[in-house]
View (cartoon, rainbow, N blue to C red):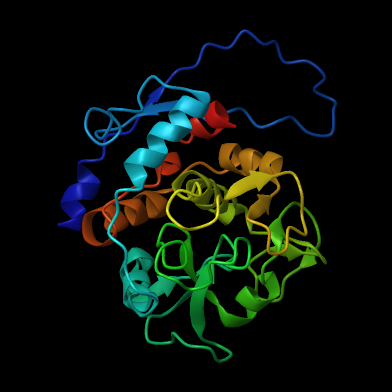
Length: 269
C-alpha cells in the first residue's frame, strides 16, 4: 500500500520568474534561493481551501486543515516511529534524526546506544510535556540517539558551535543546536508545522517562531531567519515525503504542508 501511495505522488517544479542579476560573486556566500513553487495531488482536495492564499490568510487556512487529526498516546509513539522513520534500505532499522545513523528498531529506550523520542519542538517551550496533542504529534517527533538527544536538550536552533559527539556533523553551543546539513530542512519544516498547527485555540499554548535563542519555557522557538534558510537549502527528501505519507495514511490523517509546499514558508513568514 505504501509503495502505491509513493508512486502516485506527482511533484512538479514550477519555474519562478527571476529578474535579478547575479552580482558580487566575490562575496563570502550567496543567499539561498527561495523554495520553488510546487503542485501536488492534494491541491484539489486536502489543500483546496488554502490554494491561492498568502500570509495570515494562508496560515489560518492551513491551521484549520491540519487541525483535523487523529491523536495518539505517547506510548503509541514508539511503534509509530518504527514505521514513519524506517530505514528504506533495512526494514529492521530506523534512521535517527541529527546523526543519520541506522539503528535497530528494537533498541528503543533510555540507555546509551538506544534511541528515544525527540521532540523537535522542545516540549518545555510551551510546557506541553508528553500530553496527547503537541506532546505526541508525530510531525515533530523523531527517533534520535539518546546521548545526541540529551545534548540537544531544549535548545533553540541556530548556526554555529562545536561538533556534537556521534552527531553526524551536528554542532552545538551553550544556547543553540545546528543539525547536520541533511536534517536542516526537516527540522525547519517540523518547527513551522507546529507553529501553524498549535495556535492557542485548543487548550495548548500558541506556538510561534521568533528571532531569539534561550526561549526557555516560553512558547517560542528560534531562530526563524535560520529556519527559513534551512528550508531553502535542504528541500524535502524522499524520506521526508514518505514519512509525511505514512503519518497521513496510517496515524494522524493530517499532513505537514511545508513538506508538500516548502514555498509556503516564505509566503507566511
